Length: 442
Image 1 (cartoon, helix red, strand yellow):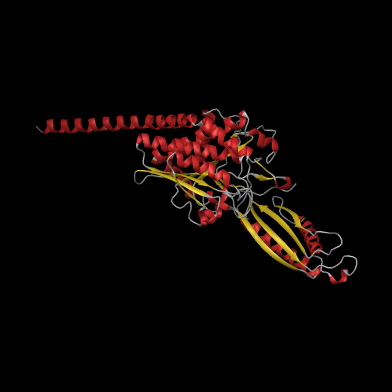
Image 2: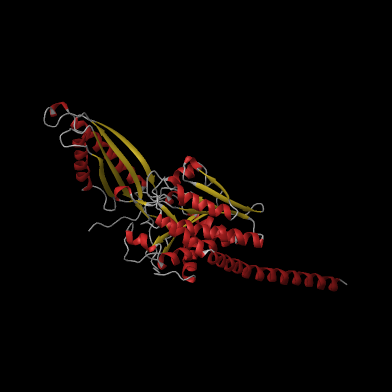
């Protein structure tokens, strides 16, 4: 009797184990099936996505003026069942579109940029290929929403429109501070590139400050009574002389570059107003802050020497980028699987972008998928023209497939999401002067 009972218990346990193994075996292919379905749903949108990118190429709008691009992108999201809020974080051309399936579940946030570069004579052009970002992100978000509905996958999908990536102050930082990204588990975006590559794991890139120095003097006739004037342009020129002298003493991996944005209107008038605009960079926030203090001292000294006054405005801070291997390696694998071109196996460092600040607060990835010839310079007309050529279109569509696939994995694989968050937590703080990898002097 006892033996029979034990037999039945063992049999029941064995059956349960078989069932568990069966369910587990079925769950794995289901994830791959959902990914495959999402990829097909991206492909089904291809012509619409190409059309959006082409339209923005023909109608470029510089930062904080992307009104028609926002209307185009949010219209597509509304048509596909997303709730859309515009003007978020008090930014007219920022938006947030949301979809939720069921209760609970992770939140995937897709970021899209859509501002064009400022060109000569007030023109604009998509030399940074931001006209591909919107279509790629929207295609992925719509595909992910549809597979969630078809497979009853709980979770949320956001599309966050972030304006003016090319123009400080950094919009993403303002949106982060305003709580726009609160509740997002992972942030996903795509940026065009000359190669398909991935970010190195850990902290990388350079921090940057952007600062204006406005000198105020007193105008006078440059010939009739120049002794009555206080030349603001002299102060600006002296500031450049001071900065040039300072460059000899900065660390090898630091950079300072500036322009005079205002310098007077006529040679026979002593300029009462002059303005300089400087960017200064280094791999550590600590050293950038020190550079800012020195530039402030130089500006004040230039004002003192000329009897002018100076107003100093720091209008944008940029931070290190945190790369997560859990995201970067999987995205890179998918990119190659989906036919991305110009594969570069060497991991890269991040740049001075407002995406970097997000990466330090929320697990995030910015895909780099080949969408222009390797020979096309960044911020060039050739890069802009590539967005409406085959290489740009295919790069954008490939990126959309990768973004959709990552979204599926985050929503359906709790262990994968945990690995992302664990790596993010273990990354620790950004580098300091004591810890960063220094450039060796020659």
